[in-house]
Image (spheres, helix red, strand yellow):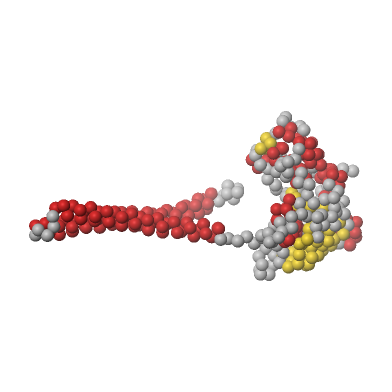
Length: 376
């Protein structure tokens, strides 16, 4: 990015400025620390000279013996060395207090989301209800990401979600798995408010596949078993068939034991998305959310994946967020969002007749030939 926008000089100057500030602070601190030792040595030698001067006079006067003076030197040196060590301790404590304050900020931070006192551990089914939901990322800012959302989705339904950029599609599904809490209203899964569930139990039953997911270093099987560590080889293969990932896995020399490089660098975007869908299916969730997760596959493959969903997981509620009409037109119902509000919620045929936004998107894609590779 820096090279693309020819900002090397700017970034170098910014880094040099930050480094210079840090350098000056360290030099100042080390200077104060270095001054401590000479100051203590001056104090020690001043005391030695003073004791020697007065001790010599006392010895001449017969008040003090040579042995007494030697003992006095030993006591004074022990006392001064202890004071010198004490000064070093004060310096170290001062430095440590700054670190303690930073650590305390982290330890005392309380998360906004937390489990209730007696959380519900089991999700009954995949039904989803939004009851007059309002949500904003910054409470009190006056800018709502979602306003007046009132939706009721039955368990096992396939719901398409479509809308323009910034209309609140991803925000809507993030509330289902309780990545955020609503400002007002409630979101229910399985007939219960998501705030009543144990968060781990809820998220184990709500699988989310994003447009850009993460694959880890390891074999394909190891990546798939992130969804279900106890999954057998046959269950992994079945999930890959449902996600149409077996098409390219079978062509690999080592099949399911092929090693995936860090971040999935050795697979394409479409292959990565299909592996992530298979990983989500292995969890056998009550709710499956696909957030534009088939954007990198052609529409023919997209259609086969959706057909496999209907066949393999009929009881799972499926929410498909997409930019392509072809990805959602076969859904039981389609939600059209506009500026954080529900513009329409109906079937494909009814939306074409009654909703201007949906009809505009449909006509622009059909006339533009956006789905030319869709099977006849």
